[in-house]
Image (cartoon, rainbow, N blue to C red; front, side):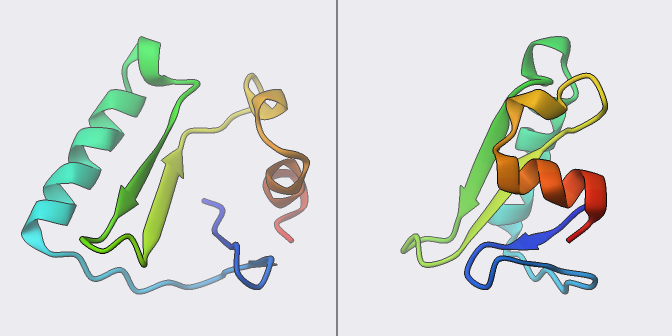
Length: 80
């Protein structure tokens, strides 16, 4: 698991995630899509109602690391 705070550009070690039911269902749907063969190289954005908060979810492994930005590659490889 890798987590990045885009505002501070820092790796995050712990996170508390509080979701409303509709947000949890949407996130579950995105995760289910990512786990399909067609969705493995995709990513999804989950936003709150006014788009002031966002969660981006993606799957990563050694086979798709090149599809990520340089910053995310550093996070995946070095966790920083």
